[in-house]
Length: 141
Image 1 (cartoon, rainbow, N blue to C red):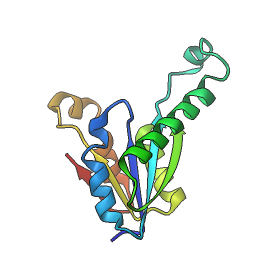
Image 2: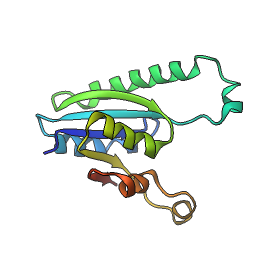
Image 3: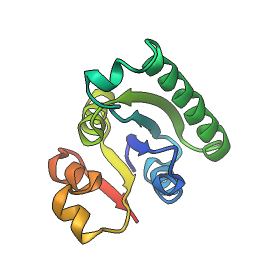
């Protein structure tokens, strides 16, 4: 069992947590804790940000925290302790930084089926995390 499991999710894509969440629960066991992480993607550079309301980021992150809370209440009752986190930025960097910050000893995340062209041009978030993580990463597909 792992004491602290980081589970990054994309709330707009249920496939990012539907398989990974049960795996995270099993890895944490009844005594561990799951750190559920929602990440707000960067909206673009300063030019794009200048068209958004001043409090856009604050409101978006508050809404994401509420959605994470709803997900945790609906899907994670009666299991390991759950802690909610929201952040924004580049997805792989944010996940690795949060893992370090919370002292996670496992990252559990979903990966979409690979696309040759996309993987060649961009690479998946999961593969970047696996490549750079100092702790074990369980990729669920």
